[in-house]
Image (cartoon, rainbow, N blue to C red; front, side, top):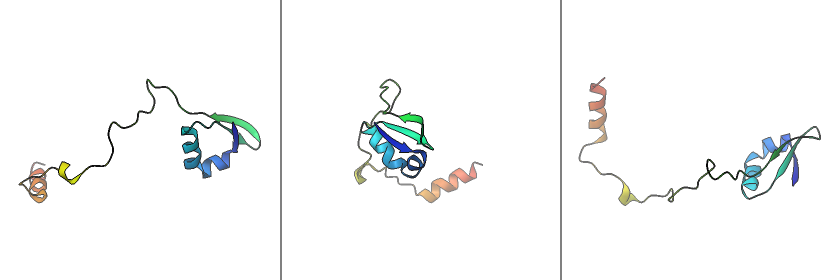
Length: 80
């Protein structure tokens, strides 16, 4: 378990959270006194779930339409 100050946690939050995700445990101090503990979240029932597929898509997955975006927007504006 590592100890970090509140200021370090604030200034380096991205790095600290990446290390917590990898299993590191931190004790957070304010003016030298411990005030919190950062531990990895392990609840599989309601916790973080990785994506089912990669966030990358291919151009072949794009939807093609014979109607232009301008025409669609004009129709939507007329409905107001």
